[in-house]
Amino acid sequence: MIWVPILFGVFKFGALGATIFLSIKSHRDGEEEERQKKEAAARSEASLPNASSNVQGP
Figure 1 (cartoon, helix red, strand yellow):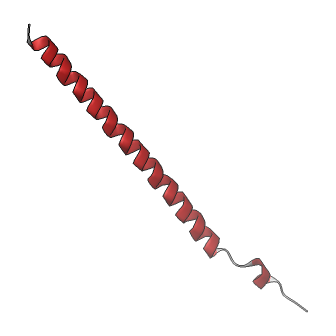
Figure 2 (cartoon, helix red, strand yellow):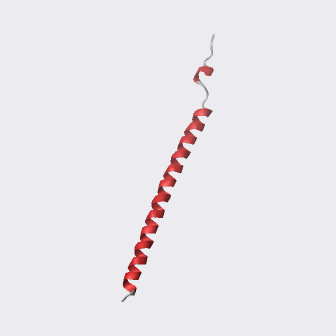
Figure 3 (tube, one colour):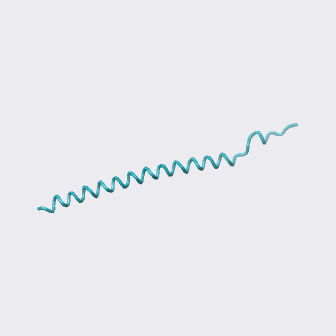
């Protein structure tokens, strides 16, 4: 019967480790996605022509 607390302890630490790993991974993935969105917005903003240069005068 000594194997029961050992088994529960291994399960507890395994679940805790998986939870910590997934929470850190989720946080880093969210930051990466946010950074990519900012870069895409900056690229699209840079590729837009300047509105004042398109004005044709008389």
